[in-house]
Image (cartoon, rainbow, N blue to C red):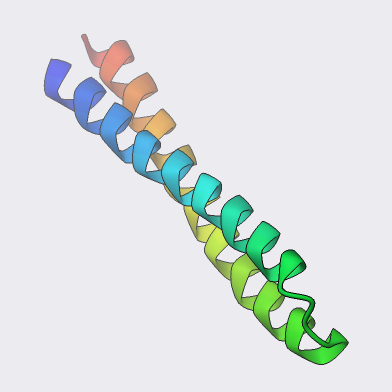
Amino acid sequence: MEWMIWAGAAVSLLGVLGLIWCIVAAARARRAGLEKQAMAARLQRLVAMNMGALALSGIGLAMVVVGILLS
């Protein structure tokens, strides 16, 4: 089950990269000086992306744990 550990690590890394992208996108939106409604709309989309990236990272970590337990 070593392949599951490495695959889980890769999936988890993709999730972490997604989280970093969300942080950078939120910082750019803040610096853009948007109006309140435009900022809220942009951040609302980022929240959905953030939750997806967090879920992806969690799934990857679960894959690593299962791979370790099955080894």
